[in-house]
Structure formats: structure tokens, C-alpha cells
Length: 247
Image (tube, rainbow, N blue to C red; front, side):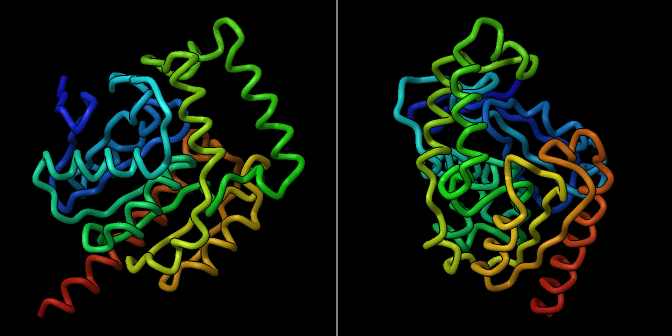
């Protein structure tokens, strides 16, 4: 068990493998067990996983929470671990956190992977997603709902605090501040994160490209190789270009 104090919270984290550091940031309500594919990635990279504020074995203080606050938590953890620069991969809400890190701290990010994520809360201009989100927020308060979100589930209150942070997220104006080479991976059948969000990310981030894979919002769990293979290829490209620039 690895726990470190970052600002006002104790953060739980794990480190696997050796090589270039790769920070993985989980989505809404999820603990780091979402990264079941990390074993594959850690064969080539030093993988740093952690539980966000309000999830897993990290503290769940009273709110409010924000995407920017959780981004500051992640950078604070990097500082504590002595990681000056890293590749960063975020899934869903974790992708919003990853974007914010890359925009606020471009000097800390080598390569950026945005998986099934969005430049703003996807309910803002999509009535279907807004209805889904309203239903999800109501379900979160039902007995037993959060217990199904992993081995170390959030509390109802901390889930809602994360959810409200997601609903408040508006990151379009920061996209042009992202300097890191970026890959955007979206599921073709992702109802909760429409395809237009991936296209909007690609349009807003200068050095980026968008890849669509077969699957929905949970494709990382149902078909991990379809996500991990292009991610590993992308990171290899970033590393090669970085090494050439240093020579």
C-alpha cells in the first residue's frame, strides 16, 4: 500500500514497470483497478496509477470538487514522486483532468492520450446525454449503486461531488494551450460521449489526431487491445521524435 499526502488529502497510488513514466488517470467514481491493462503497458513503461480525490483509497473530503482541483492533485502527486515529465493518459473524466494538466503545465507532459473524453461536459449541448446524466445522478443516490463501482467504491457523497465537477467542466478555451503531441481514442458506439466531442478535441489541440475504435464508452474493458495497441504505437512515436530532438 502506497499513500502520500498531497495538499489536503492522502492519495493512494501504485507504480508498475520500468522505463519512461506514464501517468494513468481514471474516470468518474472509479478506482485504479479500471487500468487492468496496465500489466501490458508496464512491460515498456513506468506506470503510475492513483485514485482521484473522492474515489478508491484516496481521501474523500467534503467539496466542492473541480476538474482543475483534481488536476492539481495529480501534479502534486508527480511532485511528491519526483516525476518532472511524463506521458499522461486519462479515461473519460480522467481525460478532462489530463487535458487540464497539459494546458496548465505543458512542461510536465511528454505525450497526451485522451480516451473516451470530451472538451466540456458532454451534456451541455446534447439533450440525449443530458437525460442520461440526470438519470445517472438520480441512480447514484439509490442503495447499492456506488458499491458496484469497484473493489474500493466511492461514497454516495464523493461520487456526486466528482459528478458535479464533471458537469461544471468547460475546457474548450484551454485546448489551444496544449503543446504535447496528443492522440484521441474514442469508441464508435459511445452514446454517452458522442463522436463530435472527439472531433472537437482534435480541432482544438494543434498537434493531435483522432482514432475511432469499435466499441462504446467501456471499450477499454471489453476490447483492451483495440485501445492499448494504438496507444503504445503513439508513445513509441513520441519517444522517437523526442530522442531525435535531443541529439
